[in-house]
Every structure is written in C-alpha cells, then in structure tokens.
Amino acid sequence: MTQTLTLRRPDDWHLHLRDGAMLEAVLPSTAAHFARAIIMPNLVPPVVTHKQALLYRDRILSALPSGANFTPLMTLYLTEDTDPSDVAEAHASGLVHAVKLYPAGATTNSASGVSNFDKVRPVLEKMAETGMPLCVHGEVTDENIDIFDREAVFIERVLEPIRRATPGLRVVMEHITTKDAVDYASAQDGSLGATITTHHLVINRNHILAGGIKPHYYCLPVAKREEHRLALRAAATSGSARFFLGTDSAPHTDANKLLPCGCAGCFTAPNTLSILAQVFEQEGALDKLEGFTSLHGPSFYKLPANDETITLFKSGATYPAHIDTAEGPVTVFDPGFALDWAVR
Ligand code: NCD
Ligand code: ZN
View 1 (tube, rainbow, N blue to C red):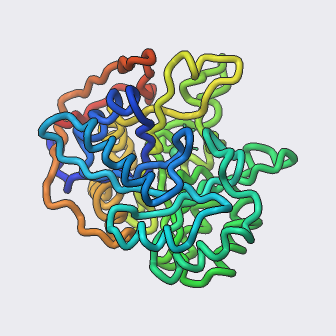
View 2 (cartoon, rainbow, N blue to C red; view 1 turned 60 degrees about the vertical axis):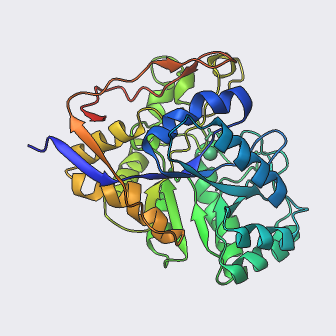
C-alpha cells in the first residue's frame, strides 16, 4: 500500500484571502502548501483597477510569514465601468492573471458586479484579443430561478451566449457544482477550464440540511444532489486537463456564519490537500491527484508547473477545528471522516 505521495507543489486557482487581520490569519494555511493562488477580488470595496490589484498584492506579500514561498496571482473585479485599457495594462504587467465576473448579487460582496452584459462587451473583446482569462461565478441571480438550478440556467442563458459572442475568450467556470457544468465543460475545447472545490467533492445538500441546519457547510454555489457530487468526483479524478483545483476557501468568522442570515463560504485551506488525497484514494485515482492540483491549472493559465514538490504521508492528519483571528474564530471545514494523508 502506498505510504507516501510526492506531488509537484500545488496551486489554488480560486482563493479568498480577505484583507487586514483576516488576511494575516488565513494566509499561512495556504502558503504552507500552495505555491501560487488566484486571489479573488471581492473585498469591500472590490479590487477593480490595476492599481488596486497591485496594492492588494503588496498587502498579501507583507502578510506572508517569513520564509514562505508563495506568489499571489491577482485578479480584477469586473464592473460595468471597467476600462478595457486598464485591464490590458494589468495583464501586460504579468502580475494580474484574470478578470472575475460576478453577476450582480450572486454571492458575497458581489453588489458591484455585472447586470447588463452588453456594457462589459468591450472589456471581454479586449481580453479575447490579449488572451486574459475570464473567471466566472456561474449562477443567474433571477429570483424566479430555484437556487439549485441557478448554475445550469446560467450556462444556457449567460455563459454560452457570452462565449458565442466573443470568440477566442478564455473562460474558467469556477467552482462548478453540477453534472450539467461537468458535461458542458467536457464538451468544450482548451479555451475553457473548470475549477472544482474540495468541499463540493465531499458534501451534497443533505450535509447542509438533513438532521439540523449546518451553517459551516453553506457556501455558494450551494452543494447540490448526490448525483452532482458524484459527477464532480468523476470529473476531478478523470485526468482531464479541463478540470483543476480551485478551493474557493472562503473564511468568515463563526459570528458571521452563525446568524439568522449567515455568510456563505467554507474554509478549507488548512486541510484541503489531506481531504483531496483521501477523495482521490477512495476513487482509486491517487495517480490523477497531481494533474488536478498541480498540472492542469498552470497549463490553462499558460504558466510553468512548479518545480518544487510536497510529500504526503499516510500517517494520519490532524488539523485545528478553527483558527483564531483578531475578528474571532473561523471554523475549518470538517469533511466528516478521518484524514489519513498528512502533508509534512
Ligand atoms: C465566497 C466568499 O465568501 O467570498 N463565498 C462562497 O460561498 N464561496 C464568494 C464566492 O466565491 O461565491
Ligand atoms: Zn469564491
């Protein structure tokens, strides 16, 4: 039986680090295991311009523990007022790697997102020209659409029309949660990638709702039926380069999660790799783990894979139930099973 597993150092292609005290508290968990991460721009106020992205990057670098080897890959938050030339300059700097599309109102801090997609057409055309990827939060915000259907409806009503109208635009379907998204992504060419989170490989909607409500399992897009979780596991472990890891680790204090209207987000940074090793082993696909965590993402983003490696040992993993921040504790995602694989 395999007792150690050595992988090229992983990258996280969708991460929330927040700012200030929260940034300081959560960054070490990611930097301990990951070489790079695509940093989400949904701060308050959002990271909209090239200049704001560089300032945020500086704050992240200053918050790194000494000796850490971690590179933040910055993104810009797309608004209806985004200037195409600012986006092009940001991309040319080599420090800003994607633009993030939040449909207005879809998730945490998305009020400045896009309602009228015609208004962002010039930006998308510039991105198609320069090869800069668009990271998409793929849920419609129409109140008449059931929350469990919002991803599938988005593909048909928004994503496919945008891609048809903007040939050459490179798109990442982020944190996909449905078989519909897996099937759509599988049928496209290399101009489309899809990230899958750790938690969506582990939980379905019963975990959130059956036997009492579990706020720590509530995230957006919300976990769906079991058949969708199984489709995600099959996609992640398939070896297809279309699918790669974006943890969507999204810390919120327990005080903000445990409210009558609690925040969406699972904090998985500390134990993500142990959970993924377990999932891939359960699927008999440990040989596919490196592709998912360390190879397919760099290839989509046209970056070299990391030269360094990390090793996981099958010796039992422990992780803190929560991490302390100056704003209060943040609960670490509990996969509901013991973890065999430890990163040391
Ligand atoms: C994210 C957050 O908290 O910023 N929450 C989440 O549930 N994933 C936003 C997001 O990525 O949708
Ligand atoms: Zn996210």
